[in-house]
Image 1: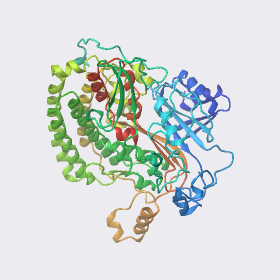
Image 2: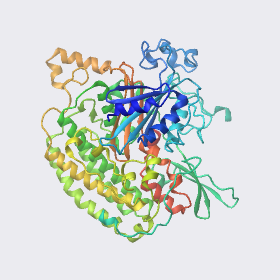
Image 3: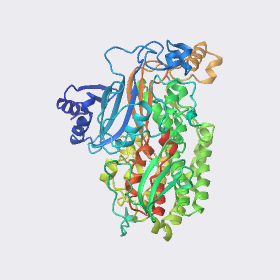
Image 4: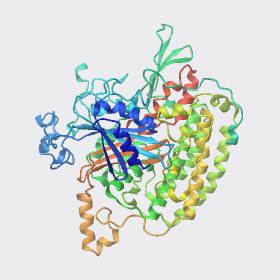
Length: 192
Length: 417
């Protein structure tokens, strides 16, 4: 069976799952609440290895001047950490009907020849909890903590959801598109 | 492998995935234990890794990692640069395996662009992938043996490492982060002298690897300290996401160069080296064997190096040859537009992966149709492998913890990015 046919069979067992194929990669989009279930189903279908978990912030995706803050409608002001446009949403308009963040789980079946890869993708809004897949793939532990630390994705039943790179008490999640760049607040200044 | 059929006594039981937190060994509630911070400034932590260990006597009963000391926001920085400028950032992540990082990023961009790399470009890329694999494994062997008290090997390994950097300098112009891989191929053709220099290096390296094997493989203290500890089973490797030499030392027959061949590996036919015991000693030895294998691949690649262009001829993506700028107005315009604005990449999401020296190195790239990447995410093998340190070090002696950590070959620049 082709990777596409495998994915179709897998998606048939999941509610609201859509399969797409681009650039030779097969993607199944699933509801956020179903991601752990989808990973278990994929594990049973032979995709027994979780390679990667990548979180992407789609805030402002596809808008005018989308390539970073320097070209955003808020203009040079967005570089200033104290500028009102720097906090919260609304720097650039994103297409309606889409959620803000995407989580891409790269799964791999090494026993098949040729090996099969599958991307499970789920879309979440800010603050929306995502079930953790640590119970299915223990190696998701650090990768989910990375997505929480840098992108602010909340994994609801992760056993140890703490910041992994940045210090505890850091303000904000720096890989988000509305995190101000071009300046850095002085951290821990209240401790002096 | 024949060298491994000898019997070894298991000093600790094979590692099992910890529960409830796979990456944390929770210490027992015992007032007699002692909390020890290993690192971040400790020579055996290979950068700035901090291991928070709880000791009961000399036995490790609690352990978790503190990461992020060299987090520099490389992925975020790459979003602010046009595609061709962002290549410079990628090798700064894993500074020992610099070429693999820039290569995997370029491969992801090429996938989105649908750009074909000419055959010679692919082969030159393979030569440099293998050169930096040797570079990385030499640093691993040198620093790893220092961790176990063997200072001499460090100097031998760094002597050969310098030869690798000489070759990189010859082709790429600088020694460590040459930005030699480009979208579409490589920046320059290899110079005429490269073939001669590389072959002399191959000859020397073959003899040296045998010396290294004698130095550590037959050394009684080294054998005693590394055999039968830190045993990884294939199932543990699968669950904890271990790839590359760490998994192959445990009998996992998985090598992207052989099983999902990319570029020149489609023709070079790499046979994965698989060991079956999965202890610290095997993880040292497999890297020695991989150096030999890489040397062989380089020799075969030099023998069969195809002629022709080394970079794609797409003027909307690749800079025109320098000499054309003096004679062709079109080339000058292309050059100017590419340098000032960069090229636009069609919107989409692509995952490219290569067999890096530490395992699968992936790049998940999201493009929005503009001249800058929307999101670059690296699948860092070091981040994933560090999760298993706690499980591997359960109830081991502190001295063995050092050996186990070194044998995994984490790189903190790769981990923290």
